[in-house]
Image (cartoon, rainbow, N blue to C red):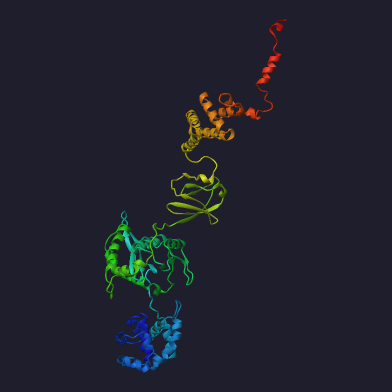
Length: 530
């Protein structure tokens, strides 16, 4: 008896219900209820009761003494066989109870009835699987699951009934619940529902506890399950861990299973019989039912889920980032010979050294990140305009890229910084050439002469060429190479000329040679007459 009383009290202190205790210990519910009530009225802890001797314990619970009976001889015989039968019945490939009962009848001719055999076997196995009460910490976990029964919407054009999944998400500490209809159980829809739940709760927990959904868990494992990489990235964005429930352990997510049951009872009736043509309209109706559900007082509790949430859990959730999570997709492409790759028929540049290599693209609706051998190569703003090219000047690709007008403006800015005469001359070159590509080529080439002949000579040459009406790179180059800027610029000092510094070529005779030679070879007129 002492053992029976202790077992009742232990099970009750671990959160096991009266009905379950009665079934597990084969004691009437009224007896269990009486012991529990007496235990509560005593005001003593379990530790204090276990320290009492058997006589004192019987005295305290004497009113229930006559109800606890000893098992019959046939039951004691079966109890000796139950450990072996329980072992054979476990698992998916375990022996059915019917087969075990036939074996029991062969061993014991005076066997109990089949129903009694099943009852005692179940009682023994339940006693083996006693679980402890789980204390949920506010802000610690968020349970995620899909309801088994689907809702539906009607296609507005064809009238076709389209089934849709229902995601049920619970914060176990306060039992605050979120429900949303989504198109499927894909990773995109799962992430969308979870993110909407976070914004509904107004914060993020420490861990997500999904059932072993393919969209969240690639490979279940008791120690280190393999998490789907997009779902893992989503959890990391909100600073959460992913802690899947164990396979075939529904007690790990009992609260979300109960929330699914309550959704069938409380929220499904609110939308049944109504026609919805979109998920938005369906979810709008579900939210109304959800608000009523979370605002209604819980069974046997003086508060509602929302009141409990605001009181104990709201401040324990971590703040959400300012930017919502965007799912990134991946694709492997090969860089073409022109140093571009294509995504959705739009072309993007990479440095020329990656030509012919395979690169990995990680992209979303805004940006594209390019990786090669796990190292980032470049990033681009996404542009879905087909057959167009996006080029970065830092990639230094051969050929001209972009607008000639913008490039011409850049050249004019260089000329303005240099001298106003240069800018005025180049404007005249632009008017003379007219065609933008030709204008850009000429202006760029003309400005390159400054590096070769110096800024001062170049400015003077532009001034002189403007006065002479010469608007070409060839003429300006010839003028500088032959020193025409000195001959036509009276303010140029002699020492500034190339000849003054020994820059004249040795084969150039000079003006004096021709003058003297012409003077000696000229004869007087009278000598010619003779």
